[in-house]
Image: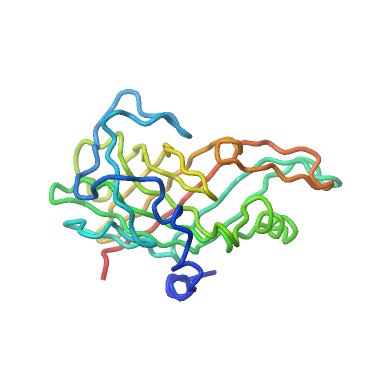
Length: 247
């Protein structure tokens, strides 16, 4: 388990490549998210950018852009959060199985405006070097080859829109919505929609989000090793988050 304090102490995370820090987003963070109820929310996965989509200035690791005026600011609690990938595969002498890699090395902030609505440019960063599955050989291959985690240590998501929310969160009620934002993996950034649920309980914000995409969407080469007989190129990403007011 990697805690927030140890994550920030690693110089390699502070000096990540600029393509990851910028995340491919280019606008002002002071504008609120265009949160709205919609009869046809964006389908989960890589999507085309709507014409009126907000964008964001570059920001520091796990932070909002400088000058963002948030009424309420939540910080992710890494020890109570988790990011996962899921891929279906067939292994020699094992058969069909699901590869699942997890990490709690997550930092980020979630901003809300005076109107109680989420603001654009909330940012989450995940340390890809810390992903672990039930197979050390798989983890080493992903680290050195598929993800090239030494060169590209972070996966970054920057929120640009929320669909399905037309009023502030109601205390104690789970709300279903769609998160839209820029996902950066390796050196590729794509606009991605996530199916999500979120609940506000006192001063604690919890949520779960999931998305799916194909490996070629992010220029990911499928593993090519004798033990892997076949591999579904669909990757499912899942994110469980707990956040509390920034101290």
